Length: 66
Image (cartoon, rainbow, N blue to C red; front, side, top):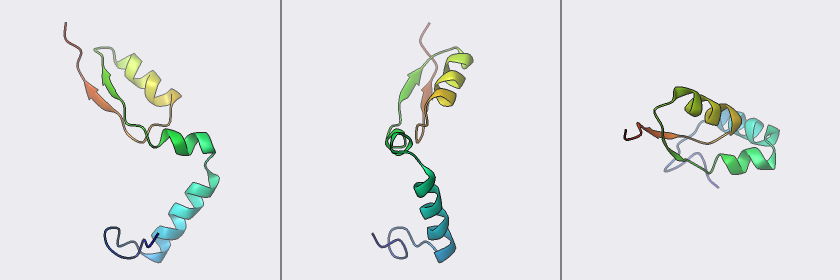
């Protein structure tokens, strides 16, 4: 994959940092990065627990309906 051109436009030092991070990650960590769950909760502890337990690439959060 060409990271120096469109759409990434990364510099050599950025590519090196990404490569280092990817090499240090386990297969499970890499898979977790593919997920972005939508969490409906009013409990901040639930959200914190989910974030600390899993290595999601992102989490979308919405307040739960009462």
